Image (cartoon, rainbow, N blue to C red; front, side):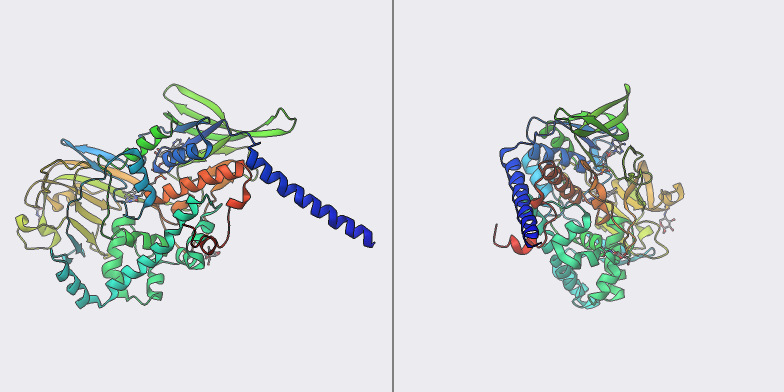
Length: 510
Ligand SMILES: Cc1cc2nc3c(=O)[nH]c(=O)nc-3n(C[C@H](O)[C@H](O)[C@H](O)COP(=O)(O)OP(=O)(O)OC[C@H]3O[C@@H](n4cnc5c(N)ncnc54)[C@H](O)[C@@H]3O)c2cc1C
Ligand SMILES: *[C@@H]1O[C@H](CO)[C@@H](O)[C@H](O)[C@H]1NC(C)=O
Ligand SMILES: *[C@@H]1O[C@H](CO)[C@@H](O)[C@H](O)[C@H]1NC(C)=O
């Protein structure tokens, strides 16, 4: 008996040594052949950033195909009005969005010239708050009404942002995560999971903010950024409030230029076709075992076709109304649509003269210099926001027209604007262009399980991240995460996946 158990212990030890030995040998000597071909489905910022990072991870030899039936850029889109172009989708970027910043530096695209703007809050009847040109005046107005809530809110957002920034260090060191929850946990521990599982309202009440402050100041911000109330999750809420920081920027010539730039830089091939289905095919390999490949079926102008890939990254939401890809041959099955809906936001761009009395102000239009109007969550408000829009490229000598002149205004609303609404809001107008977006998830915490980043062995899903928060930078972070994950799983480098306690372990490393 004694010798038997001693033997098996030795065998186990030997096996263990052999296993670790093989793993490190494989990755060090690169015995695993690199993948031959990778497909990316969708050419928004997520898909094009994935192509960029996949090239970085897998080197120059792998063939990368990016499928996109519509315009490159996806939810980053522009429309031409008169001689200028304007953003209709994702428009502003936070100064600490380091991936977006890195992209424009790498691609040599400048950021857009910034014009000062003034904000006001509309409750459906009148302007309940109007920013002054003077910082100190705004400061005392806020202090008078809300005490130190405003400052405390900025500190709260900053503390979330501090933890958020850890992701850049982890990714720099090559760490990746298999689920959105693990990624969030690595950044902010249990506090981030709690934040994602409660409403922004609950989170802020818990921090001692008053209901009045939340209704007056916080709700207008969530309405302009996510078209929803303070009942969105606390994490996307913090992202949204960070979007009210100063120093926000955009890309000269249009944010979508980053997508075309990344596509070109990654030397991938753009296939102008819509992916209809993805199935798994098992083929015998040379060494006698079997390998599975993914068959991607697609329809383009020249009919339907299919190709085989080693790795596939889905970079479009798998939700009702957003895409209709069928997955076949998978066990357990992969659904075409995960639970949860996308929220409609209509962006209406109107070139015309604003009716300033619509905002309940008696100021003459020529003196009205407010350019950003947010709204409170009250019955009278049928719009989410109204803003005077600058073109994607600001020519020299450009001045934003005052409300007394014709200008391009962007209205966000949950429903399309009726002709009557337009006639009430504008004294006159000569062009209206409407973009109906299924813009971002309808956030309803507490949250069920978020869709996984890994749908199957080597089939990845990037947009799962939108259930934490939907933003350009979030897609870029997910793109890098998925590229790292695809690389490490291909080469069986498990030590770079789902590591706990990275923050403490990497302290002092940079
Ligand atoms: C009105 C609006 C305002 C916003 N404001 C901001 C903001 O100010 N700042 C910010 O950071 N974010 C903002 N966002 C969010 C941001 O735009 C998105 O989070 C981001 O652009 C998502 O990029 P993505 O590449 O993941 O998805 P998408 O841009 O949706 O890209 C997916 C692509 O996949 C393609 N596709 C779909 N189905 C298939 C198929 N079957 N085969 C092949 N291709 C397919 C689609 O055509 C699309 O081009 C806003 C969004 C909207 C709509
Ligand atoms: C401007 O708005 C006011 C207030 O909503 C409205 O009474 C008026 O009719 C509008 N003006 C025009 C020209 O439509
Ligand atoms: C969020 O809350 C739901 C319901 O209360 C629970 O089932 C789920 O596990 C929670 N998720 C996280 C990540 O805490």
